[in-house]
Amino acid sequence: MTASKVELPKKPGIPGAIIFSLVFAFVLTVVTMITVEFSLTEILTNFGRRNLVADGLFNPDFGQILSERSLSAFIETLQLAVLGTVLGGGMSMFMAYWATEFGNPIRWLRAIVRTFNNVVRSIPDLLWALLFVTAVGIGILPGLLALFFFSMAVVTKLTSDTLDGIDMGPIEAAKASGSGLISMLRTAVIPQILPSYTSFVLYGFELNLRASAVLGLVGAGGIGSRIEFFRSRGDWSEVWGLVLMFFLVVFLVERFSVTIRRRLV
Amino acid sequence: MISFKNATVEYQPGVKAMDNLNLEIKEGEFVVVVGLSGAGKSTLIRTINNLVPLTSGELYVDGEAVHDLSRKKMRALRSRIGMIFQGFNLVDRATVLQNVLMGRVFKLPTWRTVFGAYPKKDQQVAAQALNRVGMLDRAYSRATDLSGGQRQRVGIARALAQEPKVILADEPVASLDPPTSHAVMQHLQKINQDLGITTIVNLHFLDLATAYGERVIGLREGKLVFDGPGSECTEEVFEGIYGRSLTAEDTLSEEA
Image 1: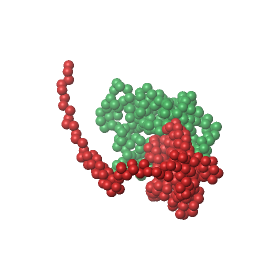
Image 2: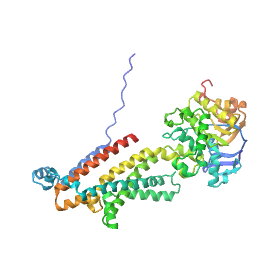
Image 3: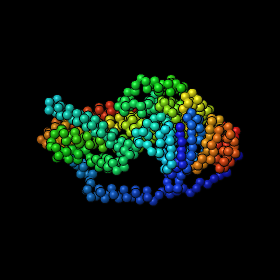
Image 4: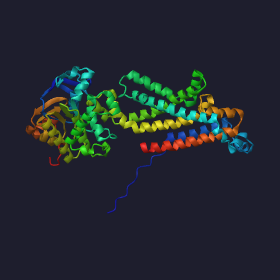
């Protein structure tokens, strides 16, 4: 028996909204290129010109890494990243929890915490550093504060999203057995989010490590201060030596962190 | 033991999940509550441990006035009432033992819960509870690694670990297959007989209700429409409760 031939319904056309968006994106790109006077030839001719910065890149001075001041700045950077992450990540557990309905039954308080989280998140790391350098002066403290707020914002956001998606059943079970708020959190919520949360804190650490390099540019301590010092003197070999070294450290730490994170989730 | 007096629950004005209910449940009874979905079975069970508060009327459980109870006393009352859920409500990532220990939380200081430092005595209570449902050997398995029937047995163990006076079971077998359903019901029945724990079970399978319900309570639109022993439950009685003729879906076994 052969099935009788069937007609597919008429194929729907491409929605107008998609065509419009594509045209809009193209026009926007062209207009932007004209207004910023983008020119490929200029880029190519500039590449050929002799350039002190590029010269430094091909002759990096790794000797700087062993110098006492650069080494201690390096260690300072790592300390900043670790401390900022531990404090910021630790705080974010509370901030995320207080932003949920089951963790904070008081509605207006919840609204305040949520607004605070949103405001903190919208400020980038370098701006934090600038703010705190202005507020508490040049040094390691503004760097630490900047990383604290920055990593708190990131980890809070990610943890909040995880909390939104947890299974509410165990919470009901904990309530039904007479648990208070803290016991409920510990027995029904934390076991559900702990692996993800740990992974988020590690991610926060990776971000902080990278951010800690630029913090020094605005006077907030760490290896960035040394890089900025050599940059202002035009010692490009030293700058590149430190940058490459920093790259190596970030790369190794990230590999390590990514490996752990893969196992967690 | 449990006594409803003119109890009413109104979720929204005009939508009554419990309508002027008067009901007495004595200590040690095994009560099955039947009714269509939306008839107020879950509401009835959840008012007993105050997960759903009464809108009006009175409710007394184990000597406490549930309709007028401080937060602290309410938690103390809840600790004396074990609850079993349709979806098991276990923490999947945690071990079976950790899940069962949740039943001990009320009796311990908060710091012990926070650090997971459960005393030997409480671990023993949890082990006894697991042993009673035949799950002791899986104490260190993760809840995700268990089958549905095993999970519900862990759910029962968690309720038992509270050393409760009352067990509430809200559709405990609705997510299980027929043989497993009977196994779970038999566990509940045996616990009721051995330990004398007052047990209230919501069911929508009528053959299970007649098989296990010493006393069957029928609800329709939040009102009590039947109250009698399971043996008296004929097809006509159930049709009266449901307000329609029965279909194959109303029973667990196929031949209805």
